[in-house]
Length: 228
Image (cartoon, rainbow, N blue to C red; front, side):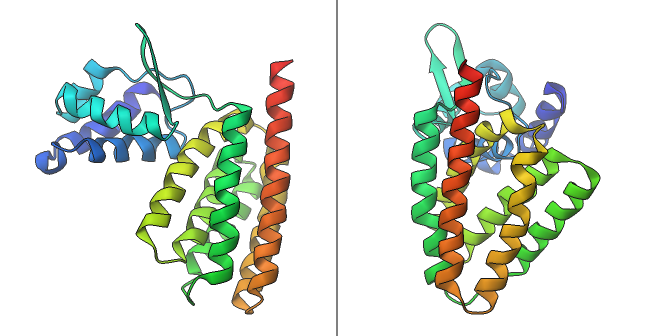
């Protein structure tokens, strides 16, 4: 997706003035596009362009940037501007620390809920794997993990997970061509749903904990290799 495609997408939202006074709304728009992989690590977020495209004031945009900076999704560089963040090894450790609190607990303690979104995410991931579409595989896996936390029915936890997944997408950007990273986890996602549906919640939570540990180690190793 080109920069012009992204701006055109944002421009459609900017034509609706009902949300244009809130920095939180702007932060949500940008966060969603980062989480979807449309804004890559290192991309510059031009204050002038975005304020014009979204039809918001510079102050509103700065409020949104402050929110996203507090979430480690963007960084401000003195005399250079605002850029989509490039997560470090320490950032990855922190993200997975949060995920180990959220996801196993969601499987263990959520009220009985609709697991159809989880099954749909696995089906989409398998289709992407068969088609060799690594980015789509990553998207589907992200949706799976978002749906796990959505089982809790908690808006606060869902927002926390949305923020984490936006930052995670910046990590996965470096793995976009590596089918070997994403593919093995698809069957594990399916196994967790089967265990959850069968009432074996403790086992599903245990599988998730092990899954997250291994994924963290793989990503940290990828960061170490890229730094050599």
